[in-house]
Image (cartoon, rainbow, N blue to C red; front, side, top):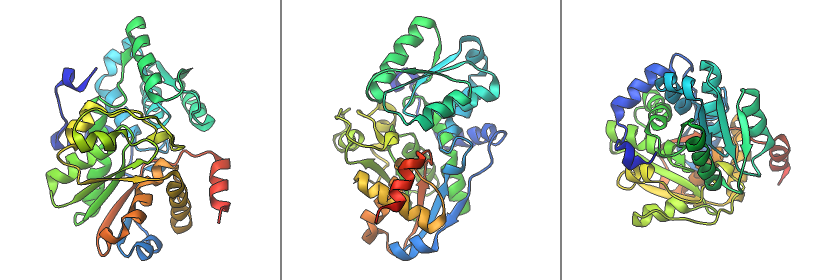
Length: 325
């Protein structure tokens, strides 16, 4: 399914409707103030802890919203999708709640932590390709061949409505937030930010973050066309080789900026978050904090919400990051 076939961009009313569904299964996540990060950045810094979700990532919101809305069809046909990890867990978790058969196509190289978590939720894992977009194309072929209900990981608006509820919670907790920073892999999180903040208060700045080694959306956002890149980042949550139509439509006119960060900057942000708050973030989950350090001069004196979008990181990788000077 492409965005043009679906023909719909979610709005704030859709987000409120999604919250009614999601609130039956998930509690709001904390928005915590960090004195240490506030001092370092000379701003009032708040972290939205999506790493505390049952799947340790924000995307579970979208998965539950989709599976509940599509429950009858999902039960009848089974569901298939593609993912590098966190989207997969969102669909697997939602499927486990509702008794839906779930198959996930994942590229080679996804951390065992993420594949194991999906299997524990009852999903069947199919490994294909070397990066996300190859896995996605294979999932689409399997869906057509075996008549599964296919969940497009990026161009499905029902996912966006669910994901955006994290931003609704954020602005309700801190109505006077000045800046919200959200990583961009496929783009659902940043799109949700724009749908919520720019509708409620257009003065709120929304800034996206991409990995320097996977700037497909950044390039596309600059000129409005779908761009492809070779992926060279260890942040699997940001390892997307092309931009997609739906997020580009939402973000092209509403997003205030995109910041590119290095893998090393994300590793440093993982450590900074842990030392400041004791919270565990994966590389993509720390991207907003990495961006905040990069643009700290623009944030001075402002109230800033940093989305900690995920905490699925291998123990060895976390230990290595924390031990590094």
